[in-house]
Length: 424
Image 1 (cartoon, rainbow, N blue to C red):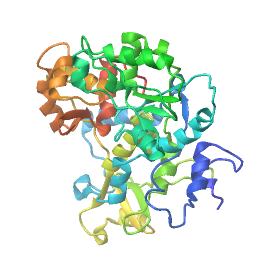
Image 2 (cartoon, rainbow, N blue to C red):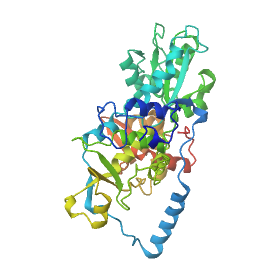
Image 3 (tube, rainbow, N blue to C red):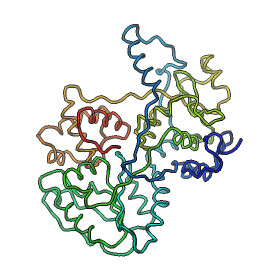
Image 4 (tube, rainbow, N blue to C red):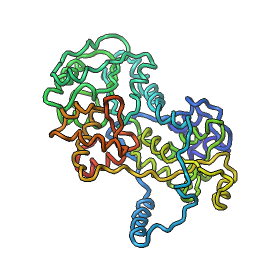
């Protein structure tokens, strides 16, 4: 079988997805020989932020979801699943956990390829490049990339300095690439919290040195409205949306367990192999399309939703129902996919919760005390324990942030309530 057959791309294509497939050297019916680091991420590309288009939900899924809701209200849920969810438990796979917690390959190839010509240009049209990073960036991917490549990283000021109106910017001059990985850490949404950011913009306007500036999408939207940051910085770019074919190629490349066995991912309800495709490369079912749409095309959000859906059977496979036994007869190992429900906002405190969540998304992370300074009223941080218990927010020492797996529900709730978003 040709290498590109399952990817539905012509052999002459030079798309990022094909280049990734050729580099990985994947064949659908062979064992994988890559290391875990090589199996980590799909190749992506950088595009203008204005061109970003999130994957759309399949029409039949939206219709079916509405009909299912109506059916449950009228007659209850009597549809028999191949496997009952109560007979499953979360799969324990270190390799897949690593993919979700350390996805530093998402940016690496895109940045290396995109920045190389610009970095070698001694008289570029602009010394600055602006990259808008999708929300819930798990580990600071741009910062990881910069350190790995040996580039200078500009450390942000302390939040207390921002609150006090401090506006002395470090010396930006030097040689080589300067990386500002978190522009959202250079301001705080408070009376004096933009002085440092304005001072930084003034220094960047005079800089004659290659400088990559990264900012999360919610912070960028705020900065455009608050200080007209788009007038001082170049046109922003971002990662292209991760669609269903990209997810298929990526999940196939990591579909091996810790013992080297090939994993088949099947829907617990129907037994369908979600990575299976026909000779044309078209997926047999729409599960990955749904996942791409739900994640908004953000790869690490899709990864966390995917990981949370993977389960194994509690009882031995010898006890499989006959229908499931027929479906899994040729599998080396089977993981069962269940639906992952959206977390719900604390009942009766939805408005306060949304104010907290918007502030966390704009700043990336905040302490409870910092939340008090950026919110329009007092008392909103009181909802933090409830947001933690529902799995919407996570805590790292004193800092609170929105969890990647909860981001789709949070984004939808904020948009529905009329909050301005960053488009990602």
